[in-house]
Image 1 (cartoon, helix red, strand yellow):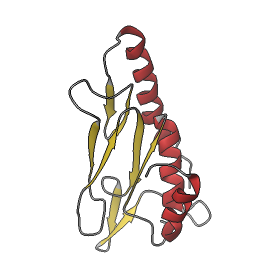
Image 2 (cartoon, helix red, strand yellow):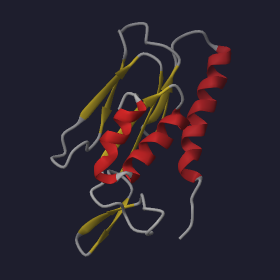
Image 3 (cartoon, helix red, strand yellow):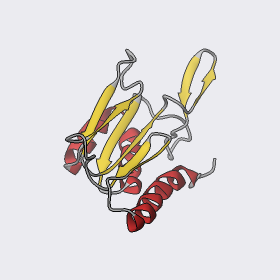
Length: 143
């Protein structure tokens, strides 16, 4: 087993890109790298940014997030998994066992001031398995 810090690279890039663009422009900015995103402030034409979340539940329904500024990151197995003997196996592994987490949510989205913070909490919540929502509620954050 190995630890792949690349999982956090995209979110670091989102935060960095937002900061760099915001230094040059005063308009509302939204940076989106493959579904992990961050914004400087609400858009001029709307009350908030609206973001759809793919495969939020086992019934493939979609969830949505509305926010004015900050970041959203999603962890789950909607896009990164392997099929083994007809079963979807998540890429998020329990570090104690090396196997996917039992009863983990299919998708966990978290809103935080920075994208790197959001992905850390969404991944930690996924690792909590059936206790993901309890963990997120205890953090007092938007999820």
